[in-house]
Length: 249
Ligand SMILES: NC(=O)c1ccc[n+]([C@@H]2O[C@H](COP(=O)([O-])OP(=O)(O)OC[C@H]3O[C@@H](n4cnc5c(N)ncnc54)[C@H](O)[C@@H]3O)[C@@H](O)[C@H]2O)c1
Image 1 (cartoon, rainbow, N blue to C red):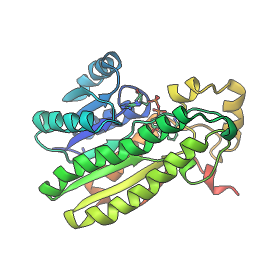
Image 2: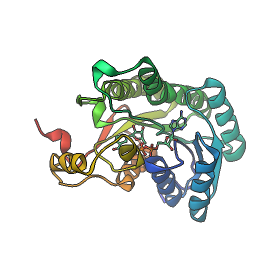
Image 3: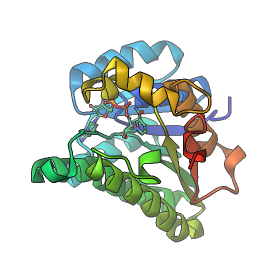
Image 4: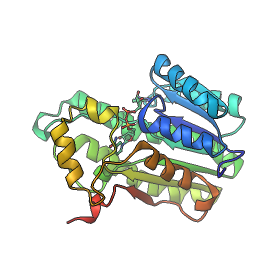
C-alpha cells in the first residue's frame, strides 16, 4: 500500500495504460480521480475500477485551460487535495514526415505536450501551497530515439522529457517531484488503432531484447514507484520501460 492516504489524478484513464495506472494506484491505497474525453468510456472504466477503492471521474479535454481548471477544481472538491498527478493522455498517428498535416501536428503537440504543461501548471500551483506533491509524465522511448512515421509524436515526447526536467528544477523548492516514464512497445488499443499489423507487431517484438511487448501493468508499476515516497530523492529523471530496446545501437 505504497500510496495509502494519497489522492491522485490520472488523465486519459478511460482505457489502456491510463486505466492500468489508475488501477495500480487504487491497489496501492490511493483515492483516485480519472479523467478522459468521453463520458461513456470514462464511466465504464470507473465502474470497472470501483471494486478496488474510491474512484471519481470527470470528463476533461487536457488541451483546454478552462477544462483543466474545472478538472482540478472538481478534484479538490472530491479528493480534498492532490498528492499525485499522472499525465498520461496522449495520441499517436503514423504518417510519413512529408505528409504530416498541420491538423495532425497541432493535435499531437496539443494533447501530448501542451496537455502535460496545462495539467501540471494548474496542479503544481496547488501542490506548491500544500508543500508537497509528485507529478509523473508520460514520455516514450520515441522521445529519446527517432522512429520514422512519427515525427510529430517523437517531437511531443522529447518535449515532455525536457519539460519534466525543467519543472523538476523549478518545483523542487516546493517539495514537488516531477519525473517521466518512457515506455517502449506496449500493446494497447492505441497501437491497434494506429494501423499496426500482426507482421509489424512481430517485427517490433523481435527488436526487443526481452523478446516480447510490454504490458500496461508494467508501465503502471513504474508510475506507482515514481509517485510514491520510495522515490523521495528522485526528480527530473526518465524511467525507461522498454524490455531493453533502447540498449541496442
Ligand atoms: N502504447 C504504447 O506502446 C505506448 C508507448 C509509449 C508511450 N505511450 C503513451 O502512453 C499514453 C497512453 O497510451 P495508450 O496506449 O494507453 O493509448 P490509448 O489510446 O489506449 O489511451 C489514451 C487515452 O487518452 C485519452 N485522451 C486522448 N486525448 C485526450 C484529451 N485531449 N484529453 C483527455 N484525454 C484524452 C483517450 O480518450 C484514451 O482513453 C499516451 O501518452 C502514449 O503516447 C504509449
